[in-house]
Length: 419
Ligand SMILES: Cc1ncc(COP(=O)(O)O)c(C=O)c1O
Image (cartoon, rainbow, N blue to C red; front, side, top):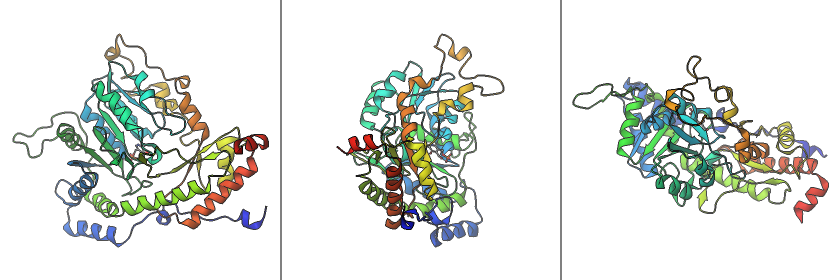
């Protein structure tokens, strides 16, 4: 191989300034907060303005800020208020921050399979998991690619089941012209370090429902009825408030969201075009009526064409400085220790086992029930992606992928793939 083919390039990294977009705007917002001396959102104005701006941008009436994406999802689940032992159907390919809130609210996560090509849950995979105990469905628009929402909403609305959209990875994504987060009953976003916009940590929750929004606001603030004639702590809740410092940074970041999303999408489209003739490596599958906002670029690798599949390809990419994640989260979420053992509070198996589940079938997680998930994890290579990627970076990534695919090509299969 020539020197040029072996050259390495340092790509922008969303864990430091090289892949993030902070400037004087964040500093000005922060200074405003510090000069005011008010760092709590209960008295300050930055978090309130962030909530209003985000709601306006999504075309909804209400948004509430929270301390993290996990807190946002926790507030969403708490708003729906499951009874102990109720079930919430979700996806096995997600962040644990989307699952633990379900357990903390004494409900049980039940895992629908994903489509092995889009990595998202579908109405067809959710339906067999619905029972009389299903209290909500939580979908994740994974990597920024929207779930097929019409069918999911039709299924759930027909049964009176609310839908939570986990949009932590999907700012700027849309489905049939509508922003994700506004399609279901509650939408949750994260401002954690690596997202489309960030304040280090933070979360945002949107809903069109006055009832849910009130419960979300209360849950984020110890369920204290601020402003009510006879306020009290109405129900079990936590302090999940966002600080004004975080709100200030998030507000400045919000002004950059459109630009960040556009750059991610443009660069992703460029990579997709470049990969068209690379056998065994496919671009993300995006429905024609959806916009993927590319939190990450998920390559689909065919092990019948690429020797060693996703892992082997990923190894070669990393050697050239493309620090990708073959197999993404490695195993379905239900195989993580806490869910595998179902040991939760003390030594108990609450809410999986106990009187709240009397007469109900035992919840058993089994990878045999989720073949699409196993296939998806086997075949995916998740490329790092951020708003600082330029054409030069993308061309480099494309050339590294093409070279790796060529090196690992299984001759007969690659030939067949081309015909
Ligand atoms: C899909 C998804 N859901 C939930 C979360 C949790 O958000 P946070 O880390 O802000 O708590 C994340 C990631 O961070 C995520 O990617």
